[in-house]
Image (cartoon, rainbow, N blue to C red; front, top):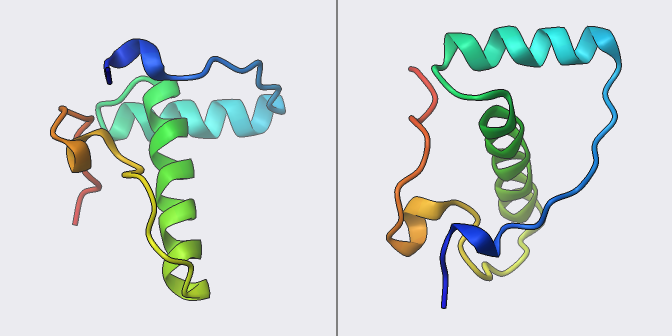
Length: 75
């Protein structure tokens, strides 16, 4: 069964500078810092898959499997 509890929790250490930059970016995008980090990582993996020709596997974002997600990147 897929629900929000399916997400893995990991400790993450960031430099103060990266933390502050990610926090500002998250605020601009109306996301939590955790949501912004997940969004950036999801986009990076999707771009890598596309560029490397890696076959698509399980959905990377929640909206791809029918669940809600954070707002998308502004154009």
